[in-house]
Length: 249
Image (cartoon, rainbow, N blue to C red; front, side, top):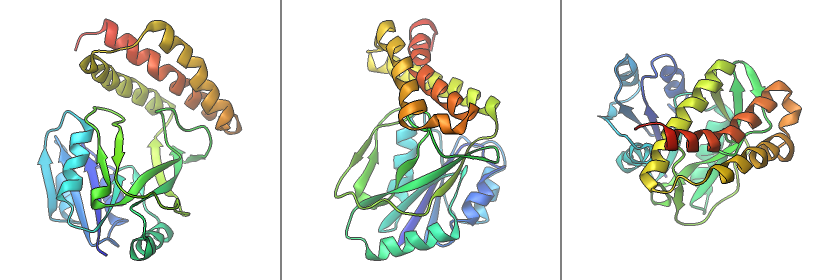
């Protein structure tokens, strides 16, 4: 079984080299360059000649382009701020050689700066695992700008054991900038759908999502970081709604 790594990037010259260097265990690396204006392309050329350049408004379309271009029997999706350890690489290779399933989730260790934050992620503001390893026909992204829905074919296999390292935010300011960026994109998706929801409904979600992240997913174990994650997760729907209603395209 052959294995393709697919990486989609936008101006990631500071991080893409470390990401790609950790993917040399695969049979090919496909890099999707979305409107890159920095040195990302030149860096990516050091690791692969499978480069796809373009401009995509929708995250789902960009990611599907990379999947469609991959030639492997199995695909590993990784972002520029993520790192595959040698232990995870070995487990991925073993899984693709032996698995009778069609897709597997990979656990994620999320870092804010150098701090490993294990608890509290979710509700559209982080992930503790993701369906990143799959046979080529088994996964497709929906047509959204941010957090596209996923469609799967075939059977889900056991979650892998070794985690992917995800350097999700550099610091708290970076986390807040991400919240601003995500809610702006979500607002565009809401306007495009023709149904932005209601103020009351999104107001209630502040509390339900905060509780889910801070209590149910044990964000309280992470101190201030866990509180911030839960707060951002709770604010995500109401900020998206307010931007969709009150801001112009």
